[in-house]
Length: 224
Image (cartoon, rainbow, N blue to C red; front, side):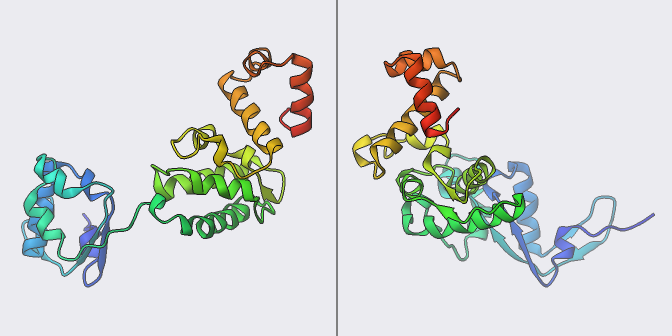
């Protein structure tokens, strides 16, 4: 009744971006290889060949060469794709980019949430630079979105950061902390409250202080 163009047809004489190519099902890899080799394919339910001229950009966070050795990725497809390779260093390898990227995401999510968040305090930025970032840019983006949502102020503070940012091998050392003692205490109390799942009695026991003292500190640091 009708003919619908697929992505290869739409991208004819242009570029098709294949993200996370390493996650492609093994059987589907063979079909992709045939299209790349022959620059043509037959659509499901059709009998005629469709010819295309498409430039392919593929991205992955996996080591595809290792994946071919483990027989999870076809070696013939790997060598067909790897005509020109660009390695983008992990976020932890380019710490100098974190501040600019964080500010970009702050501006983006401030507009999206109709807030007036303009930046971050030094302790917030220091913790971002100290973290290992196993999730790379996506993780940084998600954390900035979460902190912008949580804040009621113009400047993001480190107490808004999730617990996991303080538990990595680089982040756990208190002697590396660049903020004030009060800021460190605030972060520690917030972490203990998280571990205690909001139970103030258990949190006070872990902290070694009485309930009245804990309540005073919660009020002081705006953690109520």
